[in-house]
Image (tube, rainbow, N blue to C red):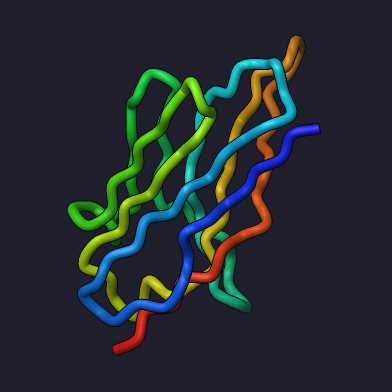
Length: 119
C-alpha cells in the first residue's frame, strides 16, 4: 500500500521560507507525476506545483517566482521550497503522487502538513 509521508510545515513570519518534503513508499510501480496541493478550510484543494518524472514543472500563478518544486526519483521524494511567504499562503499542504500501475494510473495523497504564515 502506497504511503506518502510529509514533513516541513510550521509557523513562519511573512517573508520567511519553509521547505516541505514528501516521501512515497510501499510500491514497486513507477511514480509518474508528484506534486503539492493546498487547501484552506471551506475551500477546494488547489494545485500549487507539480513535477513529472522527467523534471517538467508547472506552478500556480500565485506562487511562480517564489516556490520551487524538485524531486529525487531514487528516493521517491518531492520537495517544495517556499520563499517570500505571504499570509495568503497559509493552508494545509498535501502531497500527491501518481503511480503507474499495470492498467491504470492512480493518485495517492499524503495526510497533509499545516503551513501558517503570520503577518
